[in-house]
Amino acid sequence: MKRLLAAMVVAAAAIPMFAGVAGLPAPGDAGAPAHTRVAARYVEAGVRETGAQNLVTGVLLNYRAYDTFGEVMVIFAALAAVSAVLSRGPPARRPGEARPQVETSPVVAFVIRLTAPFIAIFGVMVILKGHLAPGGGFQGGVILGALLVLLSVVTGRGLERPLLPAPAARWLQAAGPLAFAVVGLFGLACAGTLLGYPAGPGADMLRAAMMLMLELGIGIGGAAIILWLFLQMRGE
Amino acid sequence: MSQLFDLVMLLLLIFMALAVSRSKDLVAAAIIFPGYSLVMCLLWQHRGAPDVALTEAAVGAGVTTILVLLAIGRTCRREK
Image 1 (cartoon, rainbow over the protein chains, first blue to last red):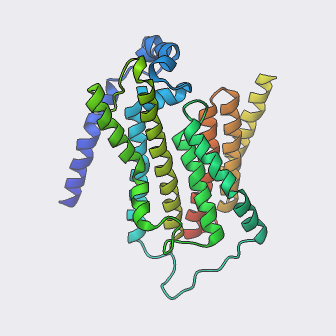
Image 2: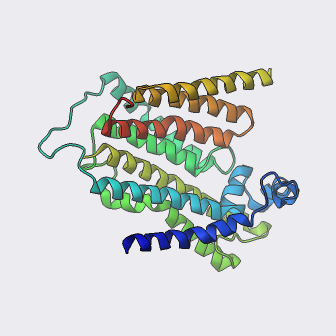
Image 3: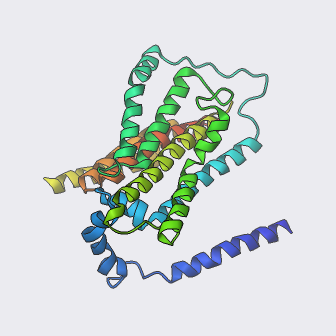
């Protein structure tokens, strides 16, 4: 019964997906819109229309915001899946057993503590400058997440006393989807479509602010998710 | 010159990929893999995709390695 239900759910998800994929132009089709019109339009009008100097950001957060929304949900789902799997399996070690103490080398600890503020500034810069230069929420978020992982190792803080307090972390992990929900509904209100952007040269600042909010959401969410993946996989 | 750079990098890439798949010690494989990512990162940069290069360096060489090492820590080190 349960298996039948699972098969039905899979079929219900897969059939529309395959139908959609079947409708796409064939790979390498020279007449596909992507090759004839879309790319040229992005390159020609992208900077003017989206307000992002970095065309990649313009495509990611404006033209293809739906795709990015999907990516953010995938990352969030990955965290949910890891949490679900690891919280049900056997613990990494038996309750009484002490965690093997691996001393962090003082050189490593010192260097990480010394460079941490600079890494943090760099991560924030990558997130905020994604508008103008290569970078953006995903990259900056991963840098910040890696920094949190390093600091967790050096300070020896695991799941029971994490660097981010658990109630706050729960909201931070959802920052990406939440930012997309807020910006998407805002776009619905002022442009008429979900994740739509107000048009016209007068709305430049507004578009920039919306994109910045998405970048921040992706970055903060990504960093929190990476820290939690690390803590959960390490156990305790 | 530019072509030569690509050629050397692609050969390195193939070499690293083979090294990862042939290594029986999973920790060694996990340490070689970021090398693969770094070469890939250079290639992205050289081919004019700095956004992807940044992602490759941060995700491929950084976070993936940590997660793979943790997974090895929870299972076993030698490939059977």
